[in-house]
Image (cartoon, rainbow, N blue to C red; front, side):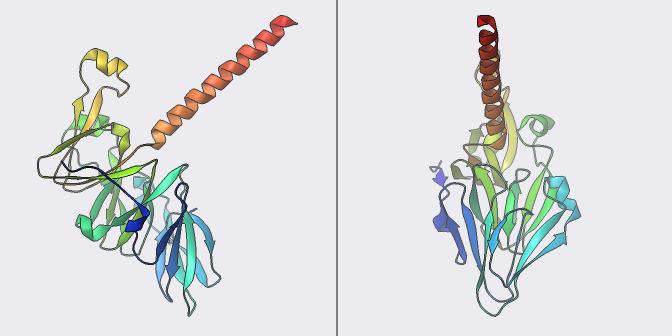
Length: 252
């Protein structure tokens, strides 16, 4: 199996510039008449001749996207710019050349950020190999499908790696680390190990098994994991504050 490749900003095509290494801005230059579409709420800045409009996309709501997308159109006669920022905390942007993935990419709900207008976001049943994988594979039964021939951007957390799998090759991953995978990748689950490992290993009862051929995108900081850590920190702070208040009351 080939070594996992870190997704870097250098792979973005001409016209796209990534500003910053973390919590970055995606800066897109627009030629006259050019349009880029994005998830609502991502616009950070735009030059005066860029027109913002919304396009209804009712089925996308089933895949975790808003009911409408925002289109940014250059109405001027010179190059204009629009700057987009992710809606997710601590996120980085991941470039996707749809042509390299046969025009289809299966993504986590909410992963889509922006694209050219040739790319559509659609709901799709998780292509799992069993009912157990559908229920316990770390992704919901309905996911996002990106379909098209152009360029798209998805967002994910932490460091993002791309792993290319040969036919029949398996990759066992933590269930919440999956960002996206191509349509040729098989999706299944496998029990972590003994009962003791399931209970005390920190990975739950199942790991996800991805089988090639195809490409897989993984993240080091999923939003589910971040949310769990924030809850732990909040509870620890609350417990500390309560203990401090009790100690202060006892001393009076």
